Length: 272
Ligand code: GLU
Image (cartoon, rainbow, N blue to C red):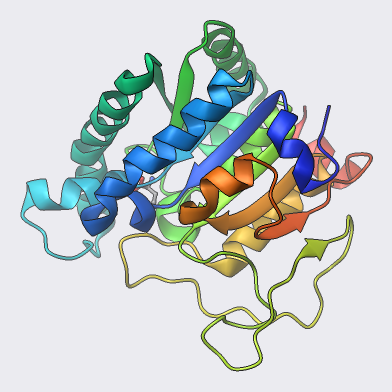
């Protein structure tokens, strides 16, 4: 059952949690432990958790002796190939504290729009969850580059939430909520709630960040949140530091209320 209000996240059956590159790599690699602690607590309370984690490129950079994010696509893909297994190792190492096993799932948005691939991915994901395994999803960067270019997995996370009929999607970044204008600007106010179907008129977003280790920003989060909410999955946008509070259903972040019914145009394109 889809969660109508953020408080319902605490007792949801299935939640997709997405974390961005800068929250769990480089100087923030130590943030994996508290993130995993919060996920493990929800898992032990009976909530099925799917983690969508970026960070392959950022984690791979030091292994390629790169001080900054590579600018060409082929080197980004090479860094992702090197970083992905290190990232999964770090997650598994941390999950071992709770006796939880991770399963790596590499997908593309195209896979989820293709009937056969989506059905294959869905079957595998359902089985992982029924076995008590925590799926960790990232874009398959060797064959697809959408999220490298446009959003640090925000859209992929929304498509995974729709495919798995998750009760809620939690999008984590370095900023604690969506604001009426870039949060560092004077007069920026936190948006607490976005009603179903509300267009968010008058909200100003900064440029999607391309200078750090990730590629997301408020606008890609809002697009992903509106996509999932239109398909009936409520979405909470908040910071990685607030993940525990978010999974307890506390009043943090920005909540995108789910629509009662799927918007047909989007539903037809993506299927169920
Ligand atoms: N799949 C990419 C990664 O894990 C996406 C994030 C990005 O653009 O850095 O690194």
